[in-house]
Length: 139
Image 1 (cartoon, rainbow, N blue to C red):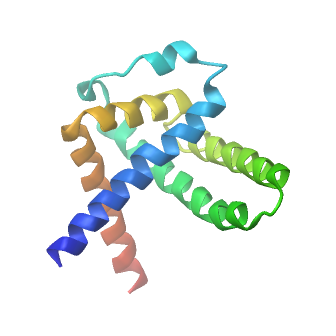
Image 2 (cartoon, rainbow, N blue to C red; image 1 turned 120 degrees about the vertical axis):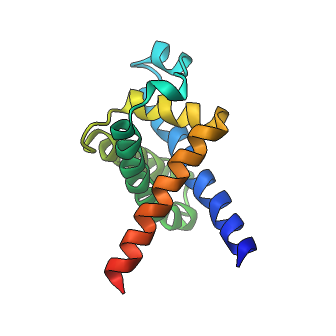
């Protein structure tokens, strides 16, 4: 069971921190390059911002999951590119529609979490708490 928990942690970290940041960053590369170059220290993020980040990351992960099979199944390269663009647009919208979150802050928190193990653990704990709450509600 401990191994399963460790594997789950690794999966969550990869899925919620690393993966969502790249596509959303690509969306904003032209509009906010100076914001991407800055990585704020973890202390600069409030609990509300981290909570909004987790909400947005879970939504981004859901969009990725929805599109992944479609992208993999697409035969033509043009079709794959169109689906990727559509997924990026939806992921960006998911971040922007999250209360208290914008794409620049989302990217800053994601980048900071990749380089700050303490921040990463705080975010992971928030994710695990949410997932436990969702499991309790569905049981």
